[in-house]
Image 1: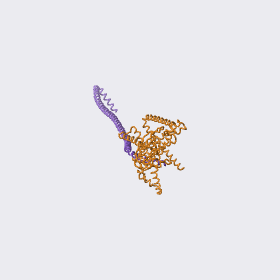
Image 2: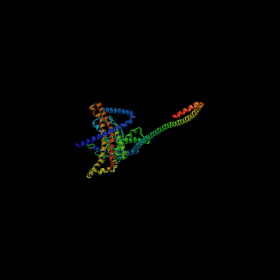
Image 3: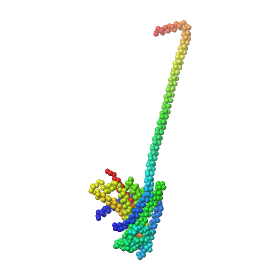
Image 4: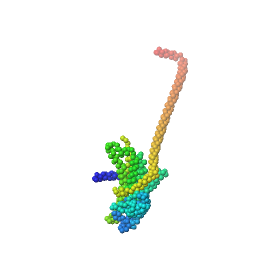
Length: 411
Length: 166
């Protein structure tokens, strides 16, 4: 236990040193973007004031709503248990796009998203509004010959003959099984949105070049340094001058994809795409496939039959290296991104919830003020983390690719 | 761990894989390739421009150096020409001087020579005139002296006296 702990602390200090470096680079980027945007700084200032006013208004509105909360009607969330459930619900994927709720009347505002599921009787599609915001398996949707219900953001198919869902002690359904769910969930919607934003932004930049303009104008002036940053500071040093070009498509796409999704997660739209373990796992598996399939002869030679060590040790080393490349490295990639984003969302929401949970102790003004200051502080850090995690994912991906494509000089 | 596995949605994974793949392909084709190509082009363009500027600078320097050299050459040539001219001038003056001197010396010698001959002629003339004059005078004196007999004897005796003394 002790040993484990010491290893952990070592790792965290190493990470801290690393993240300090990253902070510096991030600051440089910010500076360069700032200088680029210096012309528009007045406008930016104005919009910042506008946002601040909006946030203040919203926060005061929320605290007001908290004061007026009624326990008997509606779905006001004002007990620690409800808050915990609410946050847990937010961290999961959702089948409809929920914008806000009128907590006094219990009415939800948002729009439904299409549900596409592969059941035992084939493909079924319908809109998520069929569930009427139910997430506890109360409403059973009948589609032809299958009965579907939704429990904790998962769609279950009821076993033949069952009409209602039975739960065990851990609230797992006992007479229903999960179906393959290809729905356009909130996360998928977020990904599509991010993809659309990327396509729009970067094809505009590309078109600008095609028109013969050597220097981008408008928003391209912000995007171009970022592309150059990924190329010159992430891909080139890690992969090498000769081979980096082949991987730029993947690295750039992944970098901006993760960054945009992380930033979308900080908006009141409440996306938590990069906090879905399936998403981060998919990203990590892409990286693994890319570096395993582009591994050079040297890489495989060094991984499977390490030269320069006693022959007896070579198979053991090969097993360790293989496990490292096939399991541990992608696992660290996917867990890092997932855990950071989930924790970030959890902390921000918990801090916002402070104004309710601490109202008893500090009064409405004190708890709201505290919640505002802390949530603001953490949000600023989360903006940094949003970039940092995109950077780290891309950085490590290119590092692993670099390891795989490296060709050693033969001594 | 169990909740993590429970939260893992295969459907979301598949959707993400499909979307990411399509996105990578689309972005590669429509965004990254043209952007990276344009960046490369621009960078090589800048490099070339810098290089050609450097070349132009070097050429300019060369040109300036050769200009300087030409100027220097011209200056030295002018200097040499001036020097030569000065030398010619002094030499000419010198020559003229010596020539004039020689000429004047020659003239002087000629003049002296003619003066000498003139002098000699004059002297000779004077001599002959003095001789004839003295002969005339002597004739006249003798004539007068010898007109008296006593005197003639006296003279002869004096002359004789003189001759014996010698």
